[in-house]
Image (cartoon, rainbow, N blue to C red; front, side, top):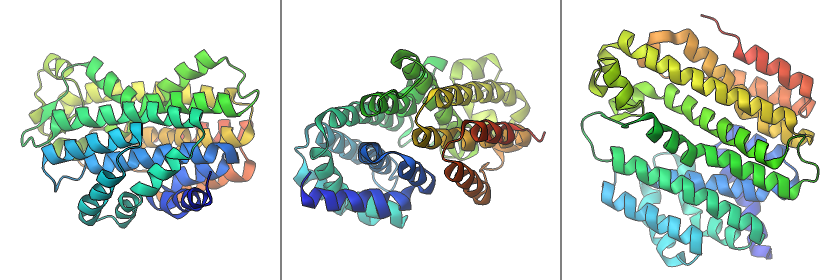
Length: 340
């Protein structure tokens, strides 16, 4: 890697990454040095594409084209001029300073991608191709709609959660097996499956947590086929919570199974630092699930979120013990305790 790319990577994986995700920044810092750059860079590129897709101040067609251009630049690394244009057009529209800085850093992100080891670069491109496909699906399904629109089937929801997050579990697995000798007690095929289920579970938590805000924005990730079976339309969910909650609980249980798969994945990892980094999302996810269970029908009136003090406590416990298996098991049991 050139000196210029080294300086860019240090800036991107330091202040820029920390500003857009404090918990993931800690996970990155826990990883061995050889994993920090490819994992952190993949995360930043995914956040950047997500920011373009979600900049609602810009027309749907313009957002789709911008996302297509950036996705192409990631895959071919031939869009430096166009990415500079995106930097100029999208960065000023970001009210969040961290996301504005991230968009401004896109040229440096692509420079670092070009300087990354070829196998890692290919893995990053594979996972970003799937993530941007999911973001395109989101724009096509929900962009510009004034009325609430739902996914058609459970298959659509599984497809979306795989493309946006399940593939991330696969990416994490591939890159760890390549970089770390004797990485896991399980074979790679089993870890790929657990990693996929883990990622899907985490994305379902995001959907469940954001149900109220999504519905008010015209987005319903809960399948029409299930709503119709319950005698509901997507536009009626907020007004008929009792009819809707059995569907909600079904997907909450599915998310819980995904997080349990994640903890099985964590338990198979031999490397303590990677085990610690991999466990953090599961611990925060388990605590979120417990809060969602406790909220019941009130999840449609509020956005459930784990308190920052609790997140800091989990991060501190994991970091101090450096992924002690017994500590992680105890933290998971405690985080999963329901208060309903």
